[in-house]
Image (cartoon, rainbow, N blue to C red; front, side, top):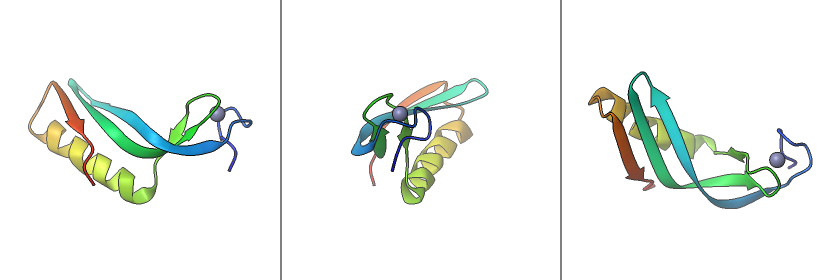
Length: 74
Ligand SMILES: [Zn+2]
């Protein structure tokens, strides 16, 4: 599949770092499996991964962490 952003790159399997922010809280999740554009670096997550990432983010936001750095664990 071609990249939706640059239209020329191709998505490759890889690991990325996802940063999510809500209000004053940020969570950085490292080592997230993603499809990453080989040209511009845009990435896309599959729905199962997105769910896990969102659950980790919610946990951090719920406890009011200012910045939390986590490693993705499936
Ligand atoms: Zn691209």
